[in-house]
Length: 197
Image 1: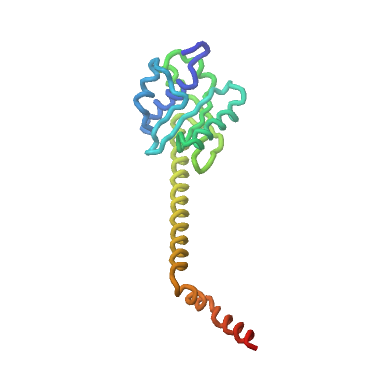
Image 2: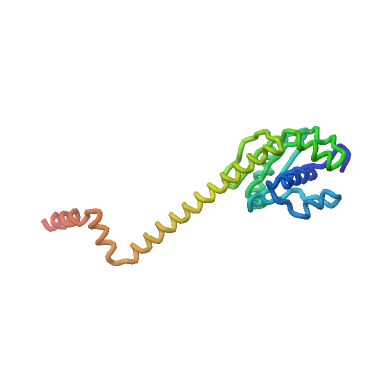
């Protein structure tokens, strides 16, 4: 711990640990150990239902916290570090914690300011407790899954259209069949008769 309280990275690890205890996320072993004095990563990466998720946090008393945090969280998703990034603004009261256990206890009872970023959308700022974060995560996951299903359907439809076009272009009978379907034969015959006159 540094003077003035825990670093933001420690708060991220404390939050991940609380979510892990609730069965929401899976926290890698190296993150669990880092709270005991090892160097902490700048971003806490956890697993939520098989989706790579990051927690990016700032303390509320930092100037321009919302805009800088939103930019960093968005970048985590854009750069492919994670598919979901939870941007968290921690209340400055958490700075008064003196032990990791005390920090976790204070975090359990405080309200966090959250915004979830996914590959498909950028959420809105909302407030939630650690327990309320479960609902926020589920909504983000559902949105991401829906977007993935939609993207897959668009790709499949595009491939089917491309295959059909290729098949039509390769068949010598396609032009005649298409003329008949579109009733262009009669129009072509009339044009030929007019040209003969």
